[in-house]
Length: 146
Image (cartoon, rainbow, N blue to C red; front, side, top):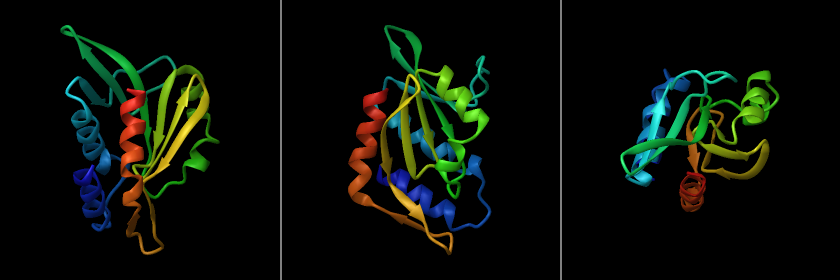
């Protein structure tokens, strides 16, 4: 978790990031939670669209989907994203979905919001303020839903 936080801070200070800039850090975080997890960035398109990640779990030489993640830029409000047609399609169609801006993580199960963890926030100067006490909660959210 500390490596993830450090990567977010380092990238955010560059002033040239986009939503895609943070994807490798999140992928690494998920892949290191459990050796059976595989986060796949830009997976095949689903009937509802193309979520940013599918998370697979391996068991007995087989990998199966256990959830999806839709990631937005670190500076974007998730409240606004929840109002979009894209999000409505995803939450309606995907049984286990996490919506994130890399700092806030909202989990939806069968269309219902079940838990949210805020790891930090963006300041006016575009720097990040991290809440280290929430790191364990984020790890639990990610591990429990996978």
